[in-house]
Amino acid sequence: MYEILVPVDGSAPALRAVDEAVAIAEGKKDVDITLIYVSPSPVYFPFYSMVGPSLDADVKEVEEKEGNQMLDDIIEKASEHTKVKFKKKHLYGIAAQEITDFANDTKKDLIVMGNRGMGAFGQVMLGSVSNKVLHLANCPVMIVK
Image 1: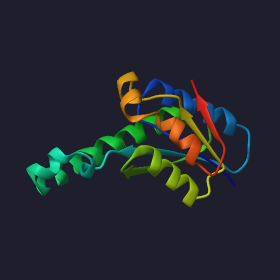
Image 2: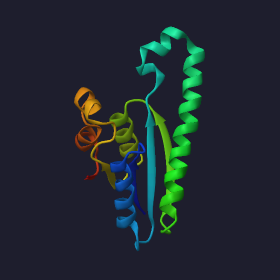
Image 3: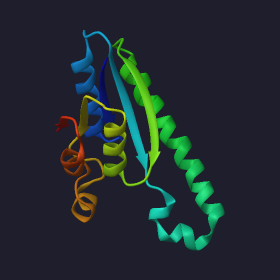
């Protein structure tokens, strides 16, 4: 079994990474693609903690629904033209850390990801998620432009 992990956030580069992963998997036996979406945990936003735990629960419920809907939509669209098997995973936390922890813990063979997703300002302020994954992952990482 060959397993490919594709982090997605709905951005154009992430969707191109899904297409690239499908192209890699096409025609091969026993290849699975897992799409992963990482929601920022309310813990990382001090405002939520100041307002109270009920807002944390509300935010998490909305994130859960929206994140899973996005994953389902991407899988539905990608599945239209392929027989590749897809799995999905929705996690909470710091994107680069969650992606690499999941990839390392589940022994993924390859990570295919977009080169940027949150926009130029976020990239400058927080650093590139793809760059961090590239340095933290135990498996090869393909960055798609």
